[in-house]
Image (cartoon, rainbow over all chains, first blue to last red):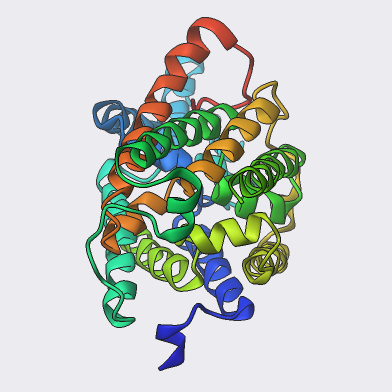
Length: 210
Length: 136
């Protein structure tokens, strides 16, 4: 089948990426952002500790009960006629606000990371391109040579990607997809900056190494 | 449990489609950056448009500006863009590449991990601006 041998046409690719972004929001209540997930995945102990303390805050019913009990203890009974306001983190209609949705637990982040690699394995297997090699193909080889020199470039590039996405507060998914599609000014600015820089540097590299 | 299942399915679809789109192929990505091949640009423009439509249908409040334009947005974006041109990877890509058998992505992944962990202590000591969230 040609969809497994050739790269997908733009429409199908767009549909798949939008399905991941919208599906993640609908399924978890939180917007997809890989760099943030990666940062939490890399700090397992902290992520697990935060999840424990967050659970206590996001159980809004328990919070409302505790507030009511404290109010009764302070002012006595007799306030049954007064309806309780909606607890924090919930709109008047009782709908949870996105920020009040707990972050994915560490194990879910680990499953996500493992599944992205599994997706790559599945794609390479089905398209018959699975092979193990230590280079990134002829174009990367022409620009940065192969072997240790190219590995240093990959390491350096990776550090810039990790550092830059944390500094900007998002990457291609968080700013590029989840942010730009909601017209967030910070995301539009970040996307212009990272895409523009990648274009300029690539044009420069292509010219120098031509 | 539901979150784990959703993120597992989402990760699988993300990894598979990024690989089928050609986003994990350095040659294909470089071709997009030098505008030799516009196909992947249309992938992103299309995905953005579909997401916008979807978020509009789900809840218009999602369009309220919540993300702060803090002093790290521009320099962070520039550093990320430079790294992206060098290693061909946004943060999820080295994981997908490893699945495809591209072992060189181990170096990219190590770099991304180091860069990610390096930022927060530097932010706490030097940059210190308000990012508008509790996330690092």
